[in-house]
Image (cartoon, rainbow, N blue to C red; front, side, top):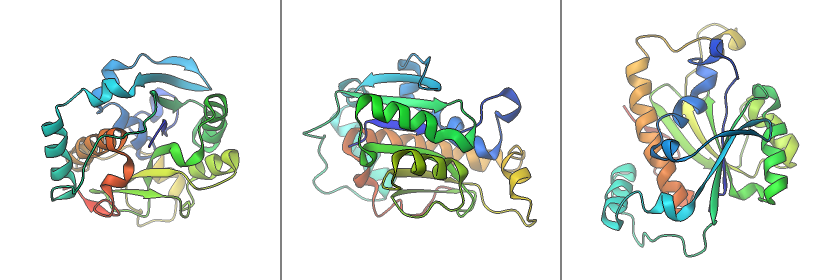
Length: 221
């Protein structure tokens, strides 16, 4: 189960549509966004929602249909979590990317949430634009936000929802991730964010395992 979701990005209007802000861009696509009142807390914009309220967004049949469409086939034994968090916490750290762990670690410590119940939404250089991936633990791919979270939690054993942005042809990675998605890329990104938002809400309701292995690397365009 997931108790805490961290959407990574950089604070400031100049970073709003950057590739590095894919996590924040996905936050804006969630159905639950309008149900959560954010406040300044844990060095972030932070809010919570009851698990039951997320579950009740759709009927059982609608959740089953959504899950089947996301993984490309009916999900055998699909069932709501018998043990689930009372509340699901969401945060958009405002520490800037390379200090994301300061915010995530503080919230996890306060609520006593173990790393394996944390999901981090972030941009991913190692995946091409048009793809997304759900994985547990593993390498950090040179991502400063993930590196900071690992240092704060003391482990890399947390869930990730990775939004592919692809690698540039040049070697200036910093300028690339801090540049905006191009006009040509926006329609592709729009599809990825829409489907990834649906996937994330299914992961909150049924557990992230329901998306595996179909979302190890999933083309969404």
